[in-house]
Image (cartoon, rainbow, N blue to C red; front, side, top):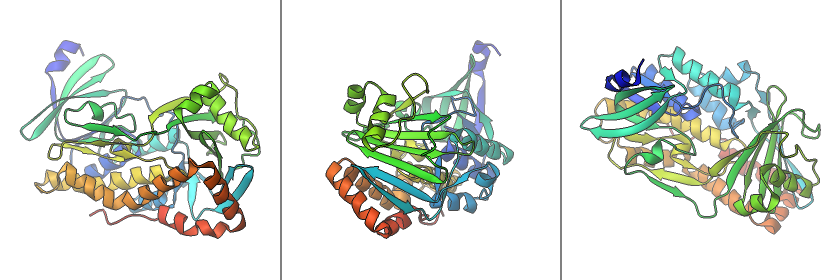
Length: 385
């Protein structure tokens, strides 16, 4: 279709969801099952590789079960996780995990989109979105896909475009607020990998400039996800070197030299976006707020908030005037706030080497000390109603 003709075409939908990661796909599916017309778009081509998010903890698994997708991880071959092994300052501690699996984002995200489409969502990948205007009871958004341009008119828009928020942060009135001294994320997929990084475990190495997490996924590849201080990456000479510095610091074997494995970085990890309080843009998942996660918390937050916002936007479609974007963010904070505060607390500890070393020594001697913390992070939040 020629570009000139496409620009004149206006599509109608109840809800446009921008971003087809877990939060976007789950929210789109929930709305479609409730009877809304939903268009889900993402600029990436799926399946696609992601830096991190290969761990689904107990809260994530229970959320999947609550929305009728409890059997999905097993069907995709997810690896069960039984423990996390933490190393810091020459010490190691092994802590049993109450629940959890490892599953590549390559496979998981694609399956969620396919399920959303099967349940009534219209989905388009390799499609970018640009906010045009909010007029009356509708939002106009420009869509570009492989040279074709069209306009969609939606009653509401859900921004689910992840940490980078390439669509969300360009919407007029949205405030983007990265945290001071926020670390950047980095990730790679390694095959083959040293056998010391065994299946069924999350391996976490903490060093002076950040930490590195390693886990084997369903095809036995080693997924590496890290958080680094920016200055540490510069001083180390790149992402791969930074990861290997921390691994060697903890007596662990290096995973790959620079250039032999494709590394991918992220924007600053801890940030939040604030939409106009009474507009028609709702934010969900990492596009709303992102805190450094450790053992699958980020995926749990994405899935839970995606499930919760479907009911909330459906109420707005039915004329509930109190269901504003600002009110939704308050509800999302009640749903996830205490667990995010726990992760902020842990992130602050991991920046203090002596305190981290002391914590690992205590956990080595008394691993049950971690039980209350893990129980909090693995529980599901308040009702989604």
